[in-house]
Length: 366
Image (cartoon, rainbow, N blue to C red; front, side):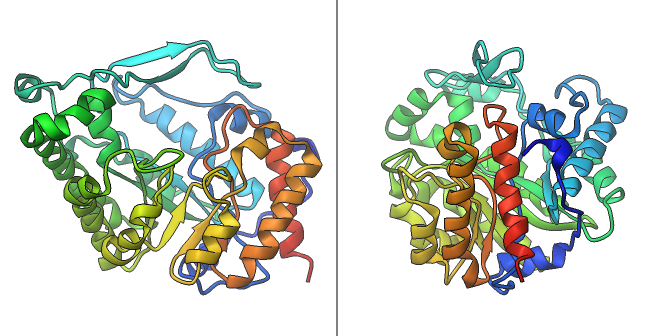
């Protein structure tokens, strides 16, 4: 299937999505949700150049608005009830590496944060770093988007976590050593990040049109957590719990995106932090169907169509895998269809659309 062949008509209803996230959905109707889609995918589906702007430059309101308009058209066309959107708040001076992008729809370069040593390695670096404030955040992308949504659509706001930015600022290797060698410095970094992001989450949760907070904070890898569970409990979960409480105070769900194997801390994430739904799954860690069987009676399940399948499988393999997930997960009334992570620029367009087409077919099969 290709974009110009898309047969389905939008029928957005964010209240249906919210019911499903709270495990009160209709077993025979599964909503769709993604953390994000790469600009290259948006461009390919819509058949127009992607709109983007460079964070850190002087605020370009026109570009922000055009990007929001494009995202709205993209998600609405494909049948989503809501989409995730973020304010602008830069964490300056992160040390980044880059290489050529060899994806099927490449950008100029693929960039990532240097994992060896970051911009903060000692107390002098900490004091010198130009820490942003929550008040520095530009909320215009959220404000604009909520006032331009089609009827029935909602907006989910980004709630930034603290583990990822702490690792970015210090470099993973430096950070891991500092947990033992300079725990007071590590605590100070987490405290400063929490001050910024908890205040920002509170502002976002109070905005008209925002229906949920969705935190991204990757805490694991293939076989375990990025830092020991005891350190997650000490440094990370208190902030997560605060943001969950903010969402719940406003009557909205708190969603967690976290890659990796979190089995050692899932009970705490559910019972202590208070997540309402979990996103990001890999078949090599635990297939989403098995995760849903284990935890789906307590939290909503978002996505899980494996990225390896979406990127490397045939269209029919993607369809078969999507049908299998729907058959096993949808009857709970707490499953939301989507990829295992994000709609990346290395996913063939026809595979992404095939996944959604199977969702539409499931929802209209009677």
